[in-house]
Length: 102
Image (cartoon, rainbow, N blue to C red):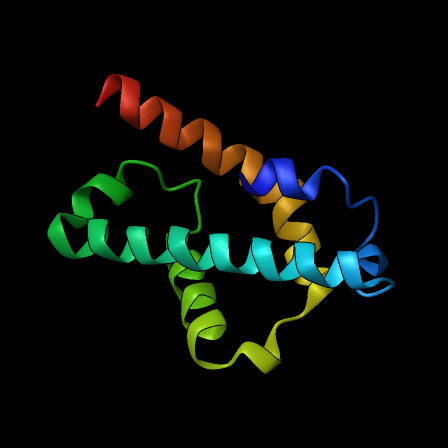
């Protein structure tokens, strides 16, 4: 879902240059919050699962969730853009691997 929403964003400024862009930013932030919450739950149940994939910055995902949840005004649209373009594809591949291979 994040990738689909982010596909229409070509630069960080697209998030803030129109009303539609801010809606996309808000939607992506909420999806990232959900991802962070799920990662926190997995970590709480069995942190060894996350430890098997050290290439993913799990702690940063959980911290981002906290920022979105408790300090929404601190969200940096350029960081969200970077996450969408550079980190979500790797996270998606890792999660797909985990789902299909345990």
